[in-house]
Amino acid sequence: MRRPVALRLQAALGTLALAAAAGVVLTMPETASAAAGGATGYATQNGGTTGGAGGQTVRATTGTAIHEALCGRASSSTPIVIEVEGTINHGNTSKVSGDSCNTAADKIELKQVSNITIVGVGSGAVFDQLGIHIRESSNIIIQNVTVRNVKKSGSPTSNGGDAIGMESDVRNVWVDHSTLEASGGESEGYDGLFDMKDNTQYVTLSYSVLRNSGRGGLIGSSESDRSNGYVTFHHNLYENIDSRAPLLRGGTAHMYNNHYVSLNKSGINSRAGAKAKVDNNYFEDSKDVLGTFYTDEAGTWQVSGNIYDNVTWSERSGDNNPAGPNPQSTTTVSIPYPYTLDDASCVPSVVSATAGANKGLKVSDGSCTPQSPDPTDPTDPDPTDPTDPTDPTDPDPTDPPSGTNLSIGAGSDGSSKASGTSYGNVRDGDLGTYWSPAGTTGSVSVKWSSAQTVGKINIREAAGSEGTIGSYRVLNHDTGAVLASGSGAGVIAFSPVSLEKITFEITGASGTPKVAEFETYGG
Image (cartoon, rainbow, N blue to C red; front, side, top):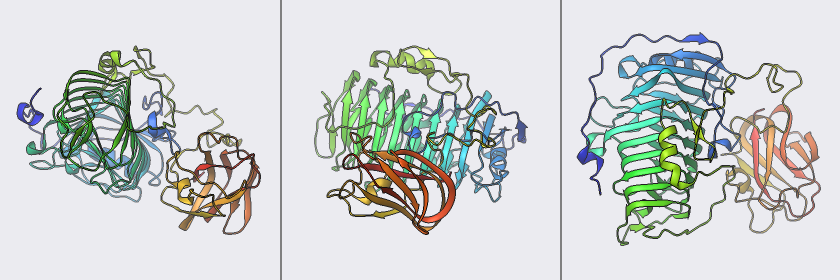
């Protein structure tokens, strides 16, 4: 077994320049090559993750210019694609103020904002000793960037030592084709490469490299921080990581087609009631790659198709409970999105050819052969597309809604419910839970403490009950006005209205309806 990274890796940081060339923000034609192929995994749920698609595209060569682009928008939710080229560091990253931003000098700050894409272009984007901090934000894409050597102690420090850190009511983040790396462990001043905490949900990390760190990343900051989850990790390389690949406290995560090399102490650590679905991964030259470690609060896992190549397993004792030497499933996990698995035997070669920044955004289609990205650029919508907001024909109401699901964190109530169900199940983001009326008809409502603008809802039936809902009405509960009526579950659009409570009333059904999610969107 290889020694921990902190003991065998020499720091190789070059001396930072005290000042860098001033960055400029240039208005560019909307032809960015960001987000080729679109989001995958759990980032496709909860309305999807589109980043700054459809917004202005700008170019930035300094951290200050990135902040200026955020602050120059009409509002904190105005879509924007920020193309980044060059090295972003402390010397060229200043705080910028404005009504549409909330930035800081010691990190790239995406705080209280939405609908943003940051993509490396040209010769590449390197965030050197400077982390990316996402807080109270939604619908974020970070693609084709390198973030390296971010420290929590020593000098300079940034973002609590996390390369990419998400915390406090974060929704729908897709990090893709990126390289996250450190030069040691906690004793050298580094923390996690990819951390999520304090109610962060619907995240995907794909085709990325995480290496040379004591800690790969966590989902949940403590055993009591269980409000995070619905995270997908696929086609990533974890290399020379001591532990946390990742650490999962509560919630659900899906790991498939990843290549794990030199996990020195432990790997996927499912704790505190967490559920991990672990499919067709390749574990190599590693120790205790799956289990519950450093706690007596167990998690669970579902395993299939994995390869364990020169993996060693420790004895089970106390708070050390590895899944091996013959890992077996201890739970089942239902995945709500489509995905295609590469055979585990080809994962090392596929991941080597696709994962990380500056790899040409190549992906896999399940054939074990890297594919070039779809040339269609979702950040540059066809002006003739009927979903263009300038088109008077308006979007197809059956299109999947985009933006933030306003139901998450809201309240709920309704008519009499069937035994064993809960109104809260329609706003928990979990398709495995549901509400049913006491009979075949009834109503369920989503409510807020202050008025919200709602223009579209998505009624999602629980697995096995699809098609049960017949006729319905959507009501503005504040006024009693009927916003929409029809039959069948799915996306329902209407003229946006400001209200504190919205009701979905089932007036006819072929059996007992099961509403897994009552999602609400701004328009």
